[in-house]
Image (cartoon, rainbow, N blue to C red; front, side, top):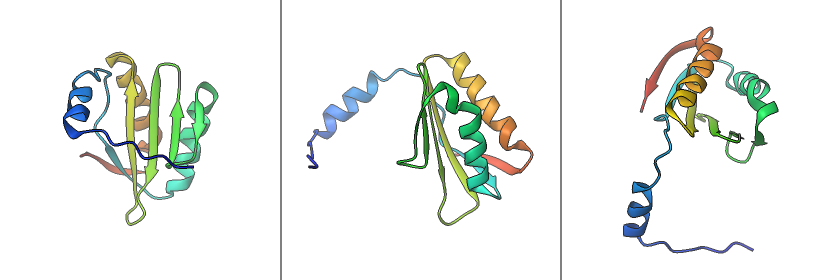
Amino acid sequence: MNIAIYVPEVLVETMELFDMRPHSPTLNYNVKGKEAMISRIEAAFGNMAYVSHLDGLTLEGHDFCINVRPSSTEDLLRVHIEAHNKALLNTLTRRIEEMVHGVSKGIVAS
């Protein structure tokens, strides 16, 4: 059973003001072999997080969340990272950057 809940836009905007967790912009990595890279990311972080494949790859750890989705039209991986503090966010971003660096043609934040 699906239940839709209506939340007024002003309430959504107010709630966003209180979401103070550090997070990355959407990071777009140019990658050939998107599924292989997603598997590498899962292997690197999967032992410390709940793993879901509902919307790409989602890794929910105690103090972080990473979502990796392949573009259906381009050789891009779209990565979004949230963490409980800026230092952890920077560490996770750097680790993923290092993982894709060998096969990456570049990164563009959007």
